Amino acid sequence: MPREATELAGIAASPGRATGLALWLKAADASGESHTIPRPGSILLTDFVTPSHILFLLEVRGVATMTGGATSHGASLSRDLGIPCVCGLGSSLERIVDGSEVTIDGTHGTITLT
Amino acid sequence: MGQSLSLDEFLQGIASSMVARGNGGNDVWPAPRLDLDRTLCCLAPTLLRDVASFSETLPHLELLRHPSAFAELSYYLLARPTGSEQSIQWQAAAEFLCRAIEHMRGADVFCETGNRLQSGFSIEESLAVLDTYRLDADGAAVGTLVALLNVYVEFLHFAFVAFSKEIHGPYTFGGGSWVIYEFDWLNGSHFDFSRAFPLKSVQIGIDLAGKVPGFDFHGRYSGSARHFRSIWGRCTTADGASIPLNCVWLTRTLLEAIREATHEMAACADDKLLRLLAVSQYQGLQNVTDGAFPGLEEDDLGSFIAQYSDSAADEWLHQSLSGLRTLSPQERKSQLVALLDPRNLSKGRR
Image (cartoon, rainbow over all chains, first blue to last red; front, side, top):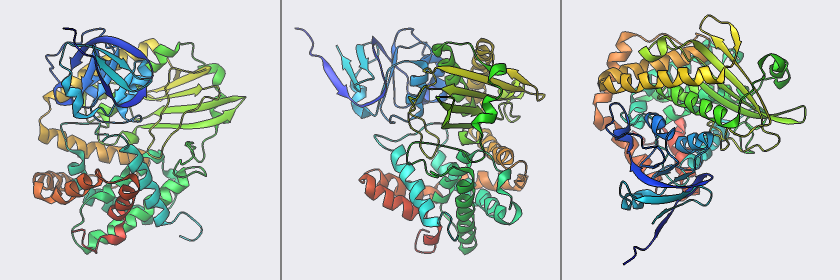
């Protein structure tokens, strides 16, 4: 039976649209000797963006965060890097598991699990 | 304060910006390892005491740089006071911040129209060197460079990035709308990763061709450095020489420094990180006040660490702030004004 698409709505923070595999990296795990390896072409999912995420941001196609708004630092970095970003998705973002295929739409503020 | 900005206007302006900051969620950047609300509580008594002393020892406000730094200091007013002497210092500090911010901003002090203009800044003078520092780079390269500069200063000045970063504008010149990015004090001495950084500062001017997004009071910018019609950039080296911005070289240099910073911060124990926080606060204030800030004594550090360990002292602040997040924007603004107002200190905030 085909799986039903799930769409979550948040705050449109950096325009653009991208599809990739979800890569979870919470802020507390981003600093230092993280065992998570940046997977080029992924969509980064996190509670909020920290400076330690930058090496991942340079590799991913988009960012979705549980907290923050359109002027948050994660949103600002995404705009400068030219990747779509959706913020403020809350705890519902945790319904998306690492490795799932997702489409992020930073223009309209949605992320869709397909 | 006569015809100038009143303390009430100051508090309303700051509260409006704080409400906007929380719109759609909590902005919890940066430094996830340290609870900054709690840390500010501990630093505030020492820092506000010294800020209050500025009103007597620093009458020449033109010495001050970086309006954002003084806007950010307003967060210290949220800290819990202990005793009437601190209440007096709180109010003196608030009134000094009020005067300083008014002095350093243009007509729209709280950026309510989305403009963020600095008093005393001349776009004509800055652009007079355009031919020397014109930059030939594409939007993606400049956007990446600005993102890396932002991240680098977040590592270096992790509690108060405003000590090192200003974005302001738009300034109209020659049919263009210019936004200025300034990153200063890039080679600080309190972290290994920054000690050998080859530049003191970077200044970038971007003509957005009329498409100017907004700024807010605390320096948050809704635009991007990727989209411009023309751009210039210059750097000041560690020995004070001005050189053109080399986008490729600086991007590589920043990436290397950020990798080092990531490892250094991870290897840093929490108590050492707290000391570095205190030192960086003082160094930042020394920088933006041209060296006029009183020096940090070892006793202050010890006291700071001791207060930080007393978690019960911060309960009030946490309860107050968590309650704000469930209110409507107008209710939150009113509550923030009440929390920030140093005149309320003797009315049960303790």
